[in-house]
Length: 325
Ligand code: NDP
Image (cartoon, rainbow, N blue to C red; front, side):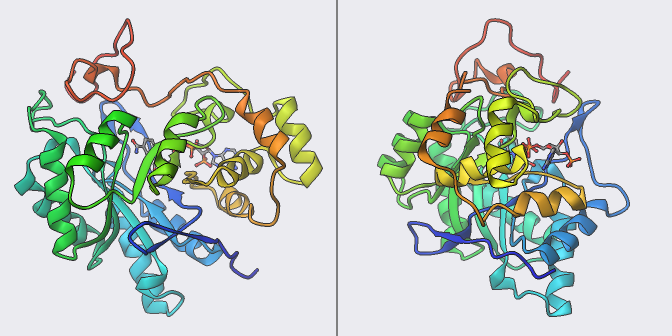
């Protein structure tokens, strides 16, 4: 089967980003991020490249930069892709927010991945932490200066942020020298992010949507309230196009100009998730899915909610900090 053609979107710095990416966060278990075993993730990435995936989403905290880079380099050596065909995103972790720590963090990501540049480097959270995970008072604008430094050095081609709210983004636009080209946030039928997406669009900032399946799937062993994979509203739309409900939800993101980054390690679902560029939803179908909105987040690190730069609403019973307890 020939590789699917994933369209590209233009970013405000003139560079292009594929309209679908592959997520690589493997989960959190017993106080630690789950790491890939026996090069499972590397083999998934090899397969993904054969299927037409060109955009990979990583982060320092995911522990996946090494296997993604290894697979990319194998496919470059095989002559299947060139480096410039690949779009590699990774993220700065919260414990490296001092301006001078950013260059070292990027060099570490380059060394782990074996790549000589990163396509998109994101500040993972606006929240600065000390090495022991206590709150640090480093302002995210100082951290942004560090991202501007690595951009200027050419170590990263484009820079952006993740988990910033509208006010934080506004401040970045006002006080920064380099504009963020992308904003990565949680977007799925339970949190449609209408306001933040419209704001980003008005500022020519590309929105990348994480956890695109929302409540459709079990997430790290948990089931969340909201539409399931067999939801009748989704099934009806899926049947009309001869697609699965998972594909309909990914297409709903694409049709709202959001770049989905679904994660899967399953070859069949890898193929399924990329096969969404041969149909398009009608406006009323987009709106039907919008109506699932309840502003429910699955990534809600409320253990950080007393941090001065916590981006989300406060909750009554914050979780305990898995990084510390
Ligand atoms: P997703 O919405 O991508 O869901 C992943 C789950 O869905 C997995 O359990 C996967 O299982 C399953 N799945 C994948 N495809 C299908 C399908 N077609 N049908 C049914 N089930 C399917 O959630 P994530 O939270 O992983 O988000 C995606 C990516 O976003 C992450 O991997 C990460 O890269 C990024 N992210 C960024 C965050 C941030 O703070 N910036 C926070 C959270 C995520 P299986 O593998 O077995 O197929």
